[in-house]
Length: 303
Image (cartoon, helix red, strand yellow):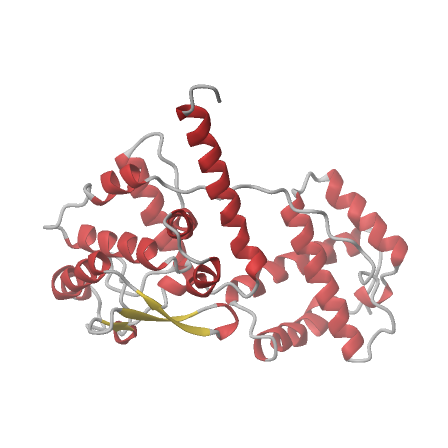
């Protein structure tokens, strides 16, 4: 009888990732898709168990992925997921060698993060109708994303108790359940205050629970999801401009870029973003250098 590879082995692996590694739901979802894809490949190669994988099979899988046209970032994630999975199997004594241990991750393409200029942001903030409940929520949402640079997953988990109006801070639970306090500006606090006293109460009436500890609610009065936030941002951007394309992560990029452009210390920006490694934050220095280069070429008579 064929062994169920990612049912028997996978379930315990994901419990390990969730409990011992504090992996985020998004990471677990991505890894699940990656392991499922590898399982289909094993089926096509008539391999009954992932424990039978060897160097030859790994090379075949690489060829399979390249033929399907995966981008470097996707390839890197898939390799990382499988390397972690096989490392877990070794830890459990189910295999003696990790076939993905010596694989080299494809170098990531250096893509400069997309960010918004001050005029674009101003037009965006001016587009909200303060008399509408959903507009009050959306304005508070945009203000908090730009004011703090928090991730979408962090934003949808913000609770009313996480906002300290007197200190001007917000409590954030980030990747791997790491916690931090982040400053939040007066514009964002004003928008949040207006929303919680008016628009949020209106939205809450649409819910059967009539109560929620979460700050941001959807049109049904229940906590908004990260997908819901992405939808709101995309819809608002299209409404403001046919040419202005941005995602919630673009507001995070904008937050970091504007801080560095105005002289903020890179290590302070690292802490504000919740980056574990400084190298991740250093990507934004490329943005500012590129911006300076463009300004120079446009303004200098002999550029």
